[in-house]
Image (cartoon, rainbow, N blue to C red; front, side, top):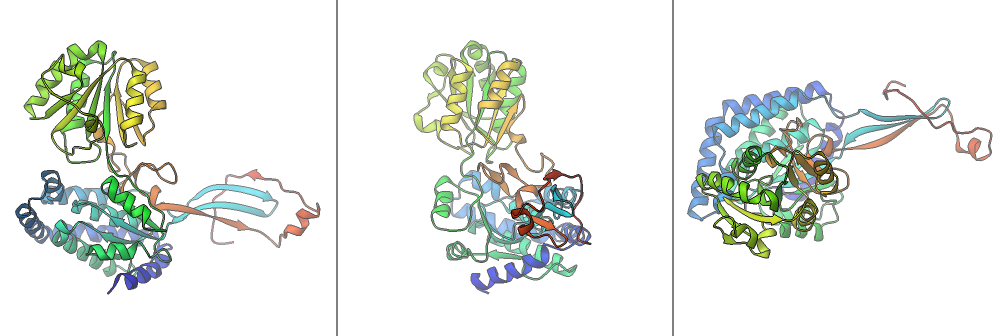
Length: 433
């Protein structure tokens, strides 16, 4: 089936999917989890084949780490699905209610976006997370993973498709695209696809935005920062920075640049270097950093770079204002953290740093839909409209206004026969009028 036909079928399915009850969606999610468990050996074999080919083709090490999908990763996505099942159904919820006049009631009600096209990198777990979030939120989905994961993605797609159709989810709600040409065709499908979520480089995301009339939601680089303030607890700061950088280096919420206040740098940096040396992290730093620890000189390009590897750039700053300015200049609006005991500095940082996720005294690695309790995420958004930060169920919903009247006509209000009350009411929308 070509991409045009897939998009048409997905649009049809999305209409039916939008009104499916919570019980059936949760039953479908349970079936997916069971199928992943029972077929995990097949999944691991397919993934090993992808890894073998990718290693021969000298795929970058960070991408190889993302590509690996072993039994532990499969268990993680199964747990994510179980968490998703336990979340309340987000569709058809009353978000606001207003009495316009007696007997004339306006409701803002949540509803699915419709058909979502997602283009993602080499992580097969992303396919499972995206698919199940779309299912729970009532959206049809077109998926395009990296070619390096084609065998893993194909078996995962087949498992999810078969499991959901088995329990009664409409045919055509999920499709897997396999070629770059499919992506270019998908970008033209603005009549059938309602939202594109790209996950990749800045250049890639810009290409998507420049070549489609479909709204785009997503982020490009994850240039995340930790700022160690002059009033930081030294040991706490070391633990947080080490975790932020090394807990899993090849992900978008790993810290890439460390900012350190000059008053604490001479004590903090040697202790940090000692711990990062154990992890074999390559360090580069500004001139002031190099006066304290032995590292290579950081360039202007380092402040703009998402390493996704065991490398960290370090800058010593004179004050918190300089740290905030650096982050707002070079950061990607993803996740930035401050380590401090100073409440005033914490408040200043949390309010002025212009990012989707701003943390106090904790690792940037917490920036994640599953860790936030969203079940999972389709990605991290650095947009400032609709959804920001980890995009879970809520980010895959929009709303519609439903107005219930009893013969009301505008003429009565235009002619001053009646007047609006515009009174907020605590009432849930119900289909039975």
